[in-house]
Amino acid sequence: MTQDADRVQHPPSSDDDQDALKASEAKFRALFENSRDALFIADAKSGILIDVNEAACRLLERTKDELIGLHQSEIHERGKAEAYQELFRRHVEEGKSFDQDLYVKTKSGKLIPVDIAAAVLEIDSRRVIYGAFRDVTERKRLQEEIIRTERLSAIGQIATGIAHEFNNLHCAIQGHLDLIMRNPDLAPADRDRLEVIKKASERAEAITRQLLAFSRQRRPQRHPRNLAEEVDETLKILQSELGAQEITVTTRHEDLPSIVMDPVQIGQVVMDLTINAIHAMTGCKSKKLDVETGRGGDRVFIRVSDTGRGIAETDRSLIFEPFFTTKGSGGAGGIGGTGLGLSVCDMIAKEHGGEITVKSRVGEGSVFTLWLPMLTELPGETLSASVQTQELAGTRVLLVDDDLTVCRLVREALEGRKCFVDVARTATQGVYMALEGGYDIVLVDVQISDMRAENILTRINEIPESERPVKLILTEEADAFERFEEFDVFDVLLKPLTPIRLCDRIAAAARQRAGNTK
Image (cartoon, rainbow, N blue to C red; front, side):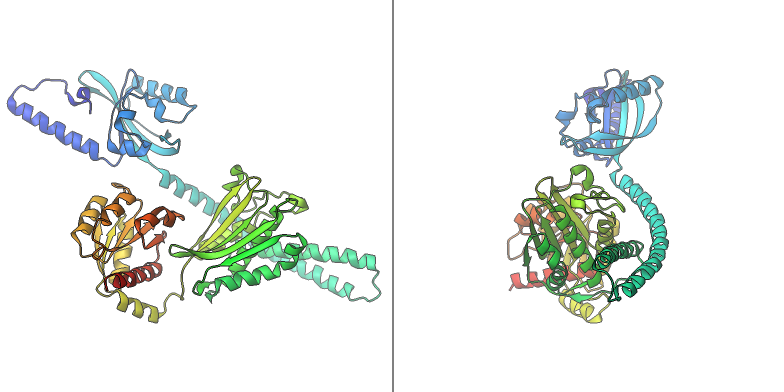
């Protein structure tokens, strides 16, 4: 607290009282500073912040000196200062505690949803507002995900019924078309019209297949396959359309092991992304399509880049929503869209334990990247488990993570492979344990709260190279490998973590460690 906040209303009556008071103040200060919630104290009359704790500084990306002296409304959304001032005024007048969800603004301009519990207190005859702010970003995300899942479930049930009905219609239309078109006496003009009907029916059939995929009526059939070969086979199917649009195609493939996948589903993703790229370049002067396969961290990727129109920033967060399309009924270049292609691609990626990321700039083009886990054999194969156990037996692993669920998963998975696993629940403890030495591998969670991951890695790199453990990062950031490459990180493990992927990458790290110590 400031000096005002540290004083009490009545002076001590004896040395014992004074000692007790100092002990009480020290205890309160320790609780205040070490709280995981962001704590703010503001003058009730002026609304000026007079004290904050370290969690408040981390939340708002500011120092104490930057925060103390600000008006409380300045830490909230721009443009809503008057509304927050009125809320503050009412709160002070009524003198009641309140609990409300609002947003705070960080120094970088990011808005963070927080749950605020505040109360009016009196310290040394000075009225103040004491507020505890808790970041509820994850809670909001889970709530939105639940709503989205329920909505998709309802749409999926409707889609299934529609798709099955459409299939019956397609059979009748296409069957009778084939019969009519077998007639050798059919006039050329009539045959051309029937071809138009047939193509429209085939397009409708493709939409039906997307509806069935969206409603998950097809079970994935996964096998180890060569990623580059699957991509090239799909591009061959689209060769005539690419040629007709005069699109220059470039492919680049990194040498990768066979990856466990459903080749039909992954082929569908490549086809949909490529068709979207073709449509996006319709009418553009530059028509270049780049398709690449490679590895990033513990994942492999298929990247499809085009020089098309690009996607507006306002649409980027919506493109994976079912039935959302930027093509309209006529679409770009007269090409209509159903709004199902990317939502199905997104679903397939997630079913494979992966994701699709997007970068786009209006007028310059788009880059879609399908990320897949580097799973080289089907789960449950005892040979893999046996080999991993031999490789990992006796390996000493230090996990630096404050998430109890992750700690349990890592410990159970690795101890099942005869590893010795120690867990540090704080970064400070983790650095201390790592510097004490004796570990082969250190796995660090980027999101640990009390120290930046870069600082942890810097401290670990102080260990002599011959004794230094192999470092791996645990994160949710798809591009984290580039961020931590300068710290000599061996690999990046992306959440959600599975025991198979964990053991596979830890075994690879153990092989690296064995090579370093020879």
